[in-house]
Image (cartoon, rainbow, N blue to C red):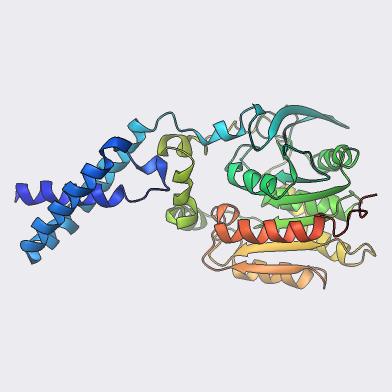
Amino acid sequence: MLQRIGTALLVWFALFDLLHDWRGARWLPAQLRGIGRVIGLWAAIQLAQAGGAGLGSLLLIFPLALVLQLGLATLRNRHLNPRDLLAEGTTATRTLTRVAIPVRHGTTPALHLVPPHGAQAVVCVAHGSGSDKYFYTWEMSALLLARGFAVLLIDLDGHGASDRPQAYPDTSESFSDVLRWLRSRYARVGVIGKSLGGCIATHAAAHGASLDALVVIGSPPALQLTRAQVRREARGLLRYAILRQLRYGSIMHLVRAWTTTPKQRTLIATEDLIARLDLCGSLRQLGHSPTRLPLLLIYGTHDALVPPAAVDQVEAAKPAWAVLYRLKRGTHLSTMVDPRTLQLVGAWLTLQLHPTSPNEYS
């Protein structure tokens, strides 16, 4: 029995090592991977010869194999931190600088990323509640840079490195000032707002902020969290969209990414702030604007915080020309990093913000 368990472990280790794109989940050194696969194949043959008992051992040992694999991978890849992808400096794909953007009530901390040959269009990414400018934004930033956009990652009031409290209407006003700063530097300005960030961006746009395209991802028209909702959303962490982040970092650093700098001060609770921002009211206001702001809304069908009935409210309130996309099996936490979202957002923003002729920006 012990021999079969050891053999089953070897099979699982060989299978896990086939996750060649998920660097954070592997622990075998590159020079030993070929040998490891041969040993794994030999172990699989041994179990196959044992018939049903071999298969039983393989299934029985899976939890232990997974724990050992993740533990060894964490030790092996403790240096693999995805936040390093957003380190200040110049690489082959971008130049990143830290900036403190003047706003009417102080400053907004931000990371400003510019592609090697500059850009005429910029996309500002506004995070959700309890997050910050680093929170799982490395892949979206890389995608936008690859499409020729500059990128601005900001800390909303009361979050990250911001020394300003979360307040109403100050938080929306600060965001409008950030867009004004971008407008003075770029011909076209787009925004991606996740959850709270989407509520803030939509409110700012409805009240006169200047932008050329807006993407709203999982923003709630109202928020009343229950333990059941939190548990449902926590179960969604096992989605492929989140697990694939092991391509960029080790488990240790991906978990640490959830422990962002806490809110420093709040003058209004997030639930009350979302109510005051009034997403549906802002959408209706945009619908009456003659400017017809290009608007894309994306919601996961398994979002525990924004259930289907709430998405129906958003769809009823949105302008007629706006596009609302329901991402199958997407959760509140996974939708932003889902490959389908990345592809959709990248293509849509390219269509809206990139020039169709050389003289469009002149």
